[in-house]
Amino acid sequence: KYIPSVAQGLLSERVNCRFQDGVEYVRTTDRRYDVIIIDSTDPVSVGEGLFTREFYQNCANLLKRPGVLVNQSESPAWQPELVQRIARKLQTIFSGVHFYQAHIPTYPSGHWLFGFASNELHPLNDFQEARYRKAALSLRYYNDAIHRGAFALPTFVQELVNAT
Image (cartoon, rainbow, N blue to C red):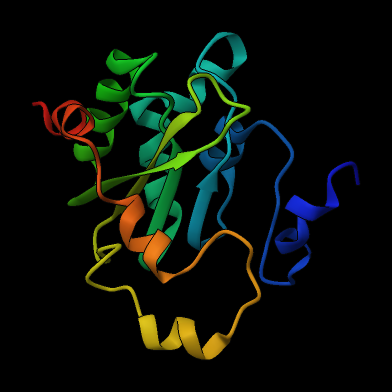
């Protein structure tokens, strides 16, 4: 309604947006999803539950096979300890956890991480470039090179997300 240029994808019949308590929803629903994208608040106050191992496990339980969980993973420059905690929690649940980055000027530091967690899919090895090109999407930001490049992390970020 307020920024339609960034919300066009939400109009697809394939998208199911839930505007409610996410912790409660994933604990009680019996629906299954191909992809769960968590666009969460910061992990303070009522948002803390969206960053717990229990919440991530409940999300994993709702994924079809193959399925993917994508989550906000905060700023590696401003919140390195939080990034590590998120990585460790996801790594105890999913066999494949990969992080990618985006530059979002309106977020603290402008450098933001997102988790890509799956037990079956790899974000680069399973990327279907021919299918993407055939779709001929008219996108202003995303393209196949951005997809690959987003997973190329600076050394300090690799050290954060790979620390055990």
